Length: 480
Image (cartoon, rainbow, N blue to C red; front, top):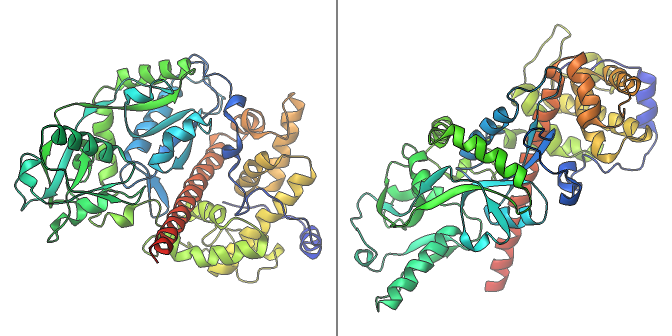
């Protein structure tokens, strides 16, 4: 988007004087939505929903993942439908109700929910009777079953027929719990124990499904939903047999959030069984027969984000910015495709206005690294200006992104309008956001929400990657 040109003198002054590093939008700072405590979130009123709803969603190749830098997944598809449901009949001029997705590892969903880090948890969650004293569940959106999955060359209809074949499942997963229950039943009947191989906690089973075409591939356990989703990307995997008991899948909420449960149940009842079927169809197109490359926690060179990561990181270090925020803006602006314009319009990976780039001390705005540097310097300038004007760390991020889209001058004008209307010019959600919706339309408001959504996904993926790396290093050290 076009970033409005402003005086070179102010920029040179800014870059010539060292300043205390701001916390917002730095690599070490959490996204502002992660710092909101549950007790500060107002009760959910189904007839008057809040402007924001924090949703904890499980990272994984089926539920919520990245492809070419953008988030996808069956839970995202279903939750997006719920977001549309919440906005049905929204008054004209009111900003849309937004779901703020907070991706976490699947094992963290319920602990994070109970800790107040989100209001809703989603991630192919089985409704657990043992957890109903701590959380509440929505009505099921599907009755599923756990199935033992193996290569098409394997023929078995019961555990007894598997012999000594091992079954690989992630540690502390619902699949492992189900296998343990089946093993206990077998032991009580005097049958041999199951050969269970516990994979590292947080590991995904989808790569195992994809790998079923290899000789001596391990068996695993999957929900029928996962098998349906991956039927084309993992054609060598087949369901050998399934458990008899149905597994109810639903979304989880805090025990005292009856209003949210009412709203979610109203939505699920209206959608019926078609909700998940549509989500599977929408998500399948983003899957390829490699499994691991689709995992949100792996930002590899096969992903466009990974290709430009070194340049983002270099600029981030020079400007004290979070490289993942720069990447999120690039995804929104160009989808990591450096569109070059030589006619003076926005150009490059970050779609920077050449005049703004020159004001940043950039000579060639069409060069990838210089283009990113111009964006990084501009964002750093905006951050310093906003903090000097009394804007909080949390709101500074929203205003920075909005100003990047519409220009610093336009943002200041919107803040003045907000003050004139009795709104807080230093707050985005519910204040300047409303003025922007009515003054410049939904485009700017959508831009801020979209960049934040991508930024949250990137930060969660990187954090999960770091945790798993630390866990692997710890395990390797323990083996020595």
